[in-house]
Image (cartoon, rainbow over all chains, first blue to last red; front, side, top):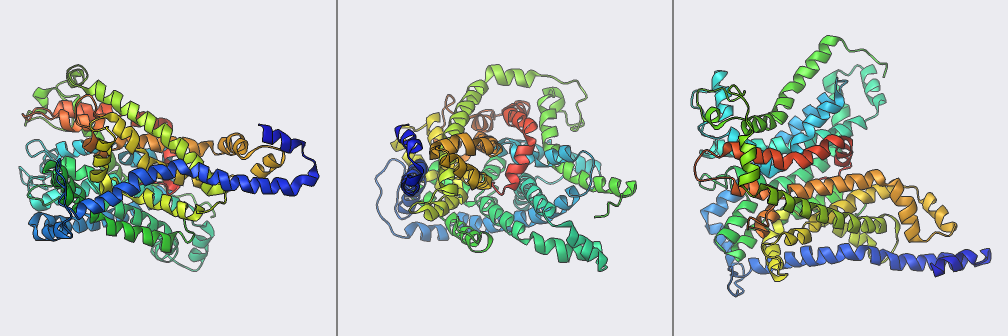
Length: 311
Length: 281
């Protein structure tokens, strides 16, 4: 490079100039380096987001010019039973799934943090549900909940905890919700367990020794040492999981399609049904946008409490 | 800690405590594989034990899947989309992450926050308007739509992950090189990237996994049998009108997971460390 060789040849007296040149380059190089990412985000994230807002305020329909209708979509949604059911489902689903993942995740992490045989193999096995394509692994669950041949019911009956034929998991309201929550917990637990485990490992051993010397039993050590020090990790994990559980699509789409009678619909699956299957893009976009306040909350909480440093 | 040797009994109890978690995590895979290897006769025999294969394993479901459905085409599509999207995203993410971690320029903080926010945007928030954008780009019902849209969630992810790795590279090493006459670009390619190779491997693995597993965009932007990916093909085209499709469906689920399982087996430690880098959806 011509400039490079000229700089190498420059006498040490030119150090000041060289530093300035470097700063100039940085000012140029920085924007050049971020521009591909910026272009991509602008074109395929920010712009579609503006479109989503426009769609939500219009009566857009597949293959038809649209008109501005104000908040009509949002008002219509609130008057529809399907949407109100979905709204309720989203909170029940997220609340139940995140709570279970948190409690089971802490338990599993505590167990994995002990001296065990086959540590690596165990971690590998525990993490597996998180790695396999969700749409495909949910098919396995679908088969496990199949009314005639359900292996869950077969086992339950064999163990004597269910009366044959056992519940029709995907055909009854509350059972269907239980089923989708179960699959979500199954899929999300590894993320909780492995991340919390990393948090546990980073707690200094001395603190436990000190607590033990002061006569603290295992339970009080957990409440007074482990839990307070895990708080930041737990906050990150819960915030992450909240947004991605709230916006879940795959599990419900494959397992129940939102049924029976909308009792497991989430915003994403309802948005697809309204926006694509019945073609009312405007209405569908309005449903999707209900995910936005949750996103804003999670981003705000992350920036405010978890990462003190911006970005 | 004064290393106390746990009594054997405690250790066995600990493992017993883990057992329910292991069964919960692994049983669906066991059952899926088992079902894919069973003959239809045994599969739909209500007197049979669903937990075992008693009438001999068979590969008939796999044979049907490979030769009588579009499975191979779907897998080829998945591979193409995943490889391209991963390559593009890791490159764009690497330069952006380097700029965020090292360079000072106007708007760097805003850009960093922007990346972080984008990283949290769920795909299900934007799939409807994106479908419209894809249509305008002339990519409706084409796998190329996926190559174009997957970077929207992969780039923020790679940037975020790699930024963390780049920050762990001591600034002094790079400054030394530049004092010796290396340009910024040379410092990046010859000094920083080689040190950050574990981070790059992680980024590639996660980007590959995320795009192989992606479902809602693939389901929305593609529909014809020649364009869909493996996950969409298996979930939408293998289900026939009658109830006797389970063997083939499970075989599809197993086979379409194979690439990810292979990567996972070889790079397990990278998956664990990438996950704990807090770098995860």
